[in-house]
Length: 258
Figure 1 (cartoon, rainbow, N blue to C red):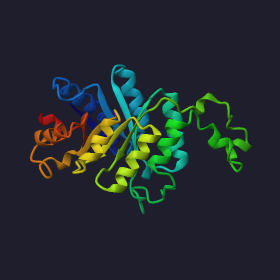
Figure 2: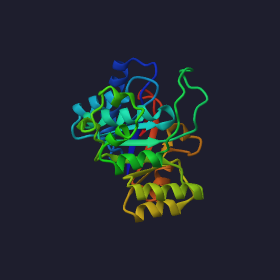
Figure 3: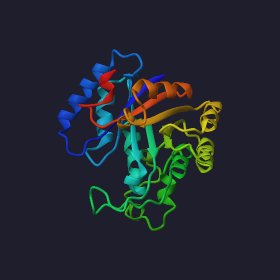
Figure 4: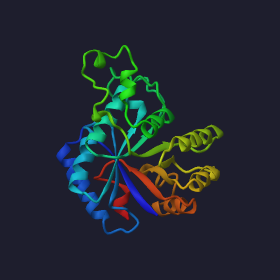
């Protein structure tokens, strides 16, 4: 079982400095067999564009699996579709989506996402629709279509063949219902947000031959868990396919202590 680092795109850190520290981090982890150096997750924050960072890392490391992660609470519907189109054009096919509470206000006080779509609905669009053309052409009030900006046959709108991961909870009956819906839709990977006592959810996912990962924040080490070894052992006992650790900064993080 591998440990996979997840890093947010920084809000204020210099891009060049961030990229330098990220490469140093990954280079240092290469000698540790428990960490899959060929896997890294970049999560979109309010900083610079995580898609472009994923593209850069992918170009420089063609054998690596670079995954773009986004929390839907930070995006409205059009922004989410725009991300899918951009990812497809850049041939970045590994994505993770998650959802959260609709923020009353964010770092940018003027930003208020139109939170009108959940992970099940977006997953259905990603996995069951070859293209989002029909979402445009079926909307009679769409200005893009009226002004001939969008062509229903344009291949740029294809969103097929994504390797889709969904970050979810797995502690209540309602969570289990959502997991089964996502399974029906065709989600490829399930990321359980923190550890759960509901072993049945993990067993169900594994029975359906899907990958399941445990996701924790590095700040939980020393609080929820006495050590990283303890967290790793817990994930191993659950027969997870990997332990994803969200690190706050590539400069100072728990993985450097391995």
